Image 1: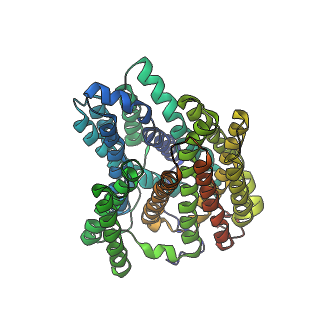
Image 2: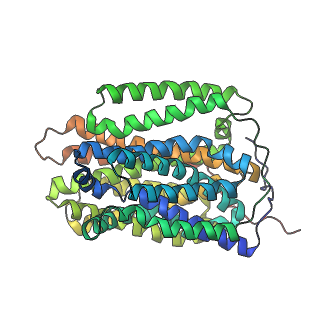
Image 3: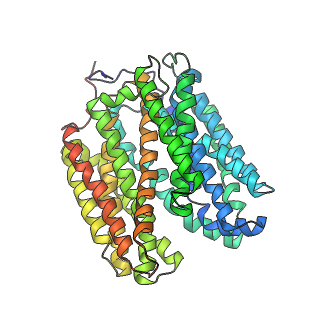
Length: 466
């Protein structure tokens, strides 16, 4: 991909349309972000209600993650073929309907099936929603969007566990899904009225071969990564799923690179800035998601904290991310992507190392806030810089690819840390394996510093006046 120096000017909505984009995007992504974590505290209650073992209830979460992986590869093509507005609002409507079906599910199997539909819709919502947002705002305006982007990506997933526990304890687990219904309906109606359709690039023919390879490949790999730590990497389902997923993805990559009209255009990774931002997203997502997985376990192993206290110890990370969103738009024009991302990643790695040895609860909370602040600064900087020169017609496919890589990075980070803990933990309650796992997350984040030299020196600038 060789983007022009200045982004091609797509048909931009008027101010009212831009406000509608922000409102509808934020509502949809808040629902999606919240649902990625809100169910975890309720799995035990769900299993009891349906008379099933807790291990069976894990299928509810795995179904969501597999559905997410299935939806991601086709998001870019669907947006180009049917229009970003139609696909976004259709996915939002499907997500809302699936939420209602989850709440009304008569059994665990039907609940898992509805969660899978939620996942597919969520897999479409994220890249298509970001495409809608980034097409509505020019590159130099996107740093200011960090305040919007951080709410669904940071605050909502962090709010999920405590909110899920509160609703389950005081109402019922059905309300975990019912809360989406009025919000989703209001967002769809607002989008139908306020969003403006824009001209889309030619979608080309649908890459059926790529779809039949990439979709099951991502689904099987996600399944293996999700169940591997709990069921054992050598269990037949996990081992076969992982091997088959990797094999299919390997063939898919070969096909995508040779196809004239690929479903996922991997050639976009050859672009210096976009490719660098995408690989950095993989490393930072792996480090962050791995740390969020390990820290509550370490907190309980080292300090004997309760599960609730351990979960709440993670929450300051979201506050730090919110703080980062308030300063990136001021720091980025002053320092530029390269000089801002490098020290932020280094500081984040050092904070993750310190977390491995912190035992005072308030020290843990302060360090988690620091993780959110410095790593959030790096993540937002990289994302804004990575898409600065992507032309409007290529935005949908680029956003789909970026989201796939970032999502896989998070799954790999959790799987890698869980595997390390499983291999070293002897069952004696020693914090050593958890500390080593946190050091692994620090190493993943630190590895990103090797790529920052490929980021541009200067922040995106406004286009020259006519």
